[in-house]
Length: 120
Image (cartoon, rainbow, N blue to C red; front, top):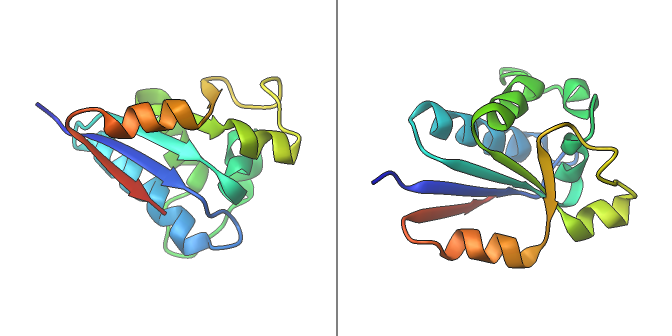
């Protein structure tokens, strides 16, 4: 059985290396065949909105929009309910395939058998 990765990223433009590392680990997990669920919280919440990942730049890092799209294509990308509300982000604002969910769903995911949770 393959271990599921649940990755929570709290950093955005405020901590670009930590942010990029989370997206990189998620995409490498997908490439390795692991089921991946990434949660966007805090300043990372903005990457659920069209155009925001395209603005992100970090030297020697893969383009964040490409990493995000890989997660959308083969994994699950979730925006934290409270984080979205605090930023005025609604379901109409997010990219197709992004779900908005809360702490109960996150806890269910990380407590599932054969799950590894990472926080960035």
